[in-house]
Length: 356
Image (cartoon, rainbow, N blue to C red; front, side, top):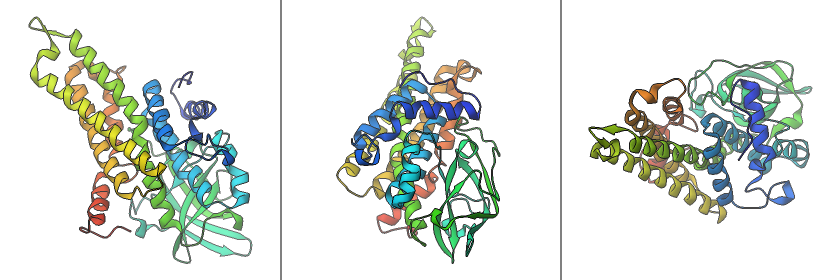
């Protein structure tokens, strides 16, 4: 991946995503009949890691994954012919930017506590509610919003210019800052009936499928970032001299570097296993939760180790190592926290709370 605009404000984030789309990044693992490249999830993993190595931007990676798994694949899998014709080609080219909105201020990741509601009227679908920490909101043309209609969780396509909706650019968060986030406020937002996505009551299943894919593949790009992180630490340990020897001669330092390498390669194994399962039409519910749990914790520990090895140099304003610590902290939360992944794994093993 080359020739990305430099990171900056929301407009810069939008242009970076568009530049990735222009290089075909959004078309992997999608049938050529639907406008994709007709290749595999293994190809997607390879392309996303290459992106991570070139951009070193965890926020851009999060933004792309929200666009892919939150909007493109739900419309691909559940959209009507009309919806696919209206949105799919423009999503693949990033002429339209999107994502999905699940989280609410009072509910967090608890799907049973979501309160955004939809009333089916003769004039259209009337939506009221509040979503929070939604990736891509400030730059999105539309979002797939999950809300209750007749008490059943369902999905709806909300445009940024629909009457009664506000796509906001706050609150601001420190982790993955280039993935623009914000609140969505819906006050008597009226949309046409044909903007319901999928069946009434299908929202829970759609959310789980979207999050499974995100958990499985978001760390493909972050592997590229971690590869750069490891190489920088190795270079520093060779150049830094302590008592006449390079820093890497210190066993405590060399062991940290060895652990960083082990974590990176283990994430690669997990991500590629998810790709293998998807390419063979196998379920990834367990593997994606395992991938997300291990990868998020590994990314955080390696980021902490990198700053520790670099010392004060790792805390300089122009050094991205310290920023990666915040990004890694965010990675423990997006797509479901580490605790949620443990709940999923335990439930699938027949222990713990039931997985819904």
